Length: 218
Image 1 (spheres, helix red, strand yellow):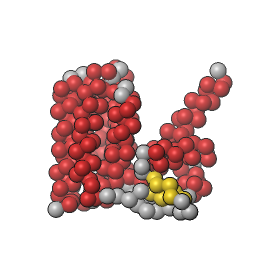
Image 2: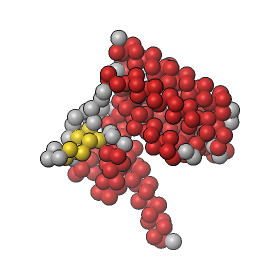
Image 3: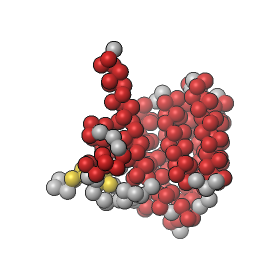
Image 4: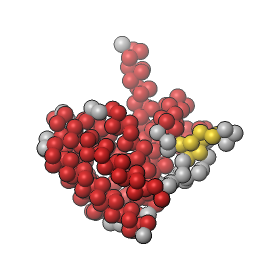
């Protein structure tokens, strides 16, 4: 029993480390091409070596950190010219995940998504970008747990973080309220249990991201 609790605590710390490092990458505090120094990260996020190392391995596996001979770990580059292709692939996965979540979410997960919708609206209204990003990340975590489709989740997570990086790098082109409304619609559609409405809301979110990207790239 003690060993199981220790394993659970370690997993939670690894998730916390992953979220913390992902946020640093998504908000460009760790810039594309920057070296990733394990000891510096441990001091920065306040977690131990084991969960930090596990988080870094996950980030390497999903392509957000590159492991290069003689150069060590580097934050992966942000490929602007490939962003529209990324969104095209993400659309298919997000639609599948949203539809599955609407069918499979527990009552607790549906309530968590409703709270995310409310919190995102408040963050947009007060222009609290840090809170907005935290809620966005939490909403993804709940949605991904609810869908119970680990292969789709594993494929889409790197795309989501790349989109966050793209949005953060070019956020002066857009309105955070537009993003909040699209995320709210998705969260509430999933929470309602309407799989078709959830799929449509997912498409609408990707449409908004595509419109934003085209504005940046033009």
